[in-house]
Length: 366
Image (spheres, rainbow, N blue to C red):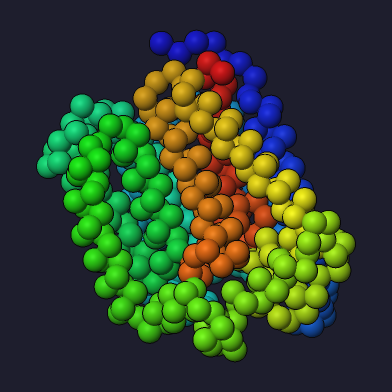
């Protein structure tokens, strides 16, 4: 039985707003030169990001005041809607193509990325499934295969765009949730071997993915091609030193790092604010992870616990992949940095997810 509703986790609220504020500042700093050149308005990306942030904050507080178990009741409907949108986005002439991927739907002057919202819909549906069938999850056929089968179907739909980065985050998040529910490690090892083979097949099926892998291993082999982004990112991080070059003083944002306000915004942050600035941002993400884990552990029911685990895992996995790419530890995947990178769908989705997490915190024993 749920105990009386209390105030939300204010530490989580403050951490989220701090990350969002840093993101707004860095989006302007990283994009001003590019925006001035392309749109004759240095505030072009900053103004749009401010609009996205405002909508996202509204969504976060709106979600914070909706009882989280509501999403259990509507999880199947939300999942079906997201699957429908994934089909619609693949229709030529309807889905917008950017960077070689048909992943966006135009909505007036803006665009929406359905795969981003699929992540949250899948988390809600899987949380419902795991809370109702936790005893079966130790069974390979009755528990693990049905849950992972649905996840892999969604992954396949996303790969038709193709969007390997978003698909990877979706699968990794759901694997964490399923493992938390009590799935056996031996089953994961067996499926992992199959997954590695399939992942290798996806990489080998597209030449640009092979180039991303080879550039990750040795970016200087093709410094003006596949290794360009990683090299320029490292050239940004290195000179930043301890204190950085100063806010607004990045050199790499002068058309060296392509569209630095998106996936490689952390490189510009490290260049301008140095090791101390980068560490502070990572500490904020650490606090967010800590509070999220506490909320999951204190959730009053299994659905709330699994929902919290899914949301926290999604954010943490995106942060690890993005920072790994920017620092040259992982191949380029096109994953945004939560709260900081420019982007409407990703920012709105993350803030909505935090809103749900805050509602769970209102009933959790922290």
